[in-house]
Image 1 (cartoon, rainbow, N blue to C red):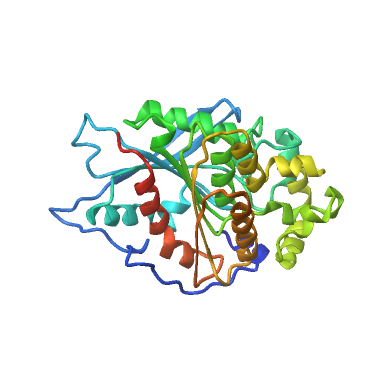
Image 2 (cartoon, rainbow, N blue to C red):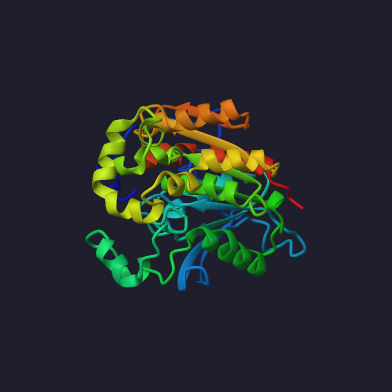
Length: 340
């Protein structure tokens, strides 16, 4: 994650350990003449929802080039704040982890990693134009890359990116064959998108996700339920102070707008409507600044009766933790998604 985000979140860099013998993200798959490894490429797509061209990193499993009649489930992996589409492969080493899991007998999957800017993977409550976007960007940010014509990032991922991948690659074209995952901001995006588009994604996984965004709402939003539901008021205050204007534009200035972008609320409404709930997995470091948010989200789903597989392991809000546990979500998604 970008150093500015580390300062913003007060992340505690800590060594993390693997769980249950799963390969670490820094594990290397077998190499050489008999190497059974996948390939990584970068595509460019036009997004109608954004009015912009965006990059997409794609991992293709080892058998993709040799078994031309085979179709594959797809797991979409979202980056965190101040990140980009290269984070999961470049820093998280997710391709090596997927190769290791496949070598150990896990199902083969396509992985797709879109560029999500600092969008929170949602449609902004206030649709800023490119000029206003430039004013809001942090120093050093690339306005040509990060400022789009129309910030409809939920439709961008759920429709533009998914349709592009389904058209370009041999995929299992159904919600049962699609999963979505992410870290931090991307963990939030994965759960919110899966709840918002149950006909697109059948499963969602979060690493250290900002799963209780109501805690980050400004005091003007309304009732204490929004502002203080989780116990992590320290990180909430830092976040509000440094991202106040941007979060107000994205999430809104009233409780209705915030709750419309709240994963727990969206899942509760989906269940009440009789919709098909996605399978859900979440983990968080025990010393992560967002662990209280993750526990609040877990407890809210427990009260509502929505199933969630939840874990906490040693570590903080940092790449050492995500590299150590990226294999957890990959293995879990491999068990959830249909392969035909």
